[in-house]
Image (cartoon, rainbow, N blue to C red; front, side, top):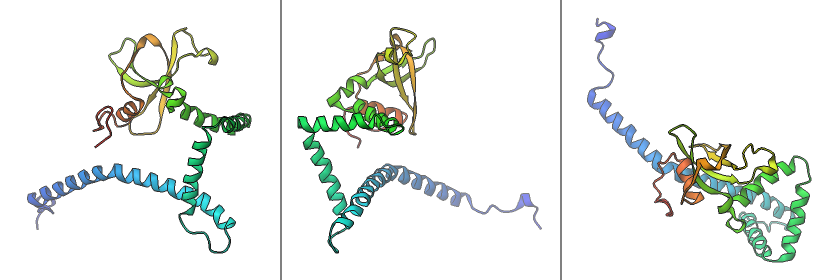
Length: 219
C-alpha cells in the first residue's frame, strides 16, 4: 500500500495546464463582459424603476385594461423631456426655484435634496460645473506623492474652516468603489490639469487602467 506521499496526483501535468488555460480564458471573458453587464443592469434597473412608479399610477388612472406594460416608461421620458422644455421659460424656473426653497426648509429632506442638487450643479456645465469641478494634481507636502483630485470649493470662508486665506477644498475619489475624501489644503500644493472631469473620474476610478484615451469615448 502506497503511503500518502506516494499517491499519484489527481490530475496530470497536461490536465493541470489545460485547467489553468481554461480558467485564464474564462477570467479574460468575464473581465471583457463585466462592464457591459454592469451598465446594462443599471440601465434596466432605471427602466424598471420608471415603469414601476409611473406604471402603477397609470394602471389606476386608465379605465379597464387600457394600461399596457411600457407605458410608464414612455410617460417618464415624456415628463423629463417636458421639464427640460419648460426650464427654458422664466415662469417655470421661478416655480422650480420656489419648490427648491421649500424643500431646503424641510429637516432631513433638505440634507438629501441639497446634497444631490449640489452634486448636479457641480457637474452641470450650464452652472459653471467645470469651473467648480476643475481637475487638479495634488502634491502632498514633503512627500513624493501626487494625486488627481477635483477642486470643489475655492472659498472656505463661509464654512469657517479655512486656516489659511489660500486654502481650498479638494475631493479625492477612490479607485474601484463609490467614495472618497474631501481635504482642505493650501492652493500652492495644487497644479491645474488640462483634463475633463469625466476623464479624471475614469482615470481615478479605474486606477489608471481605463483603455479610453483622453477626450475620446472608450473602445
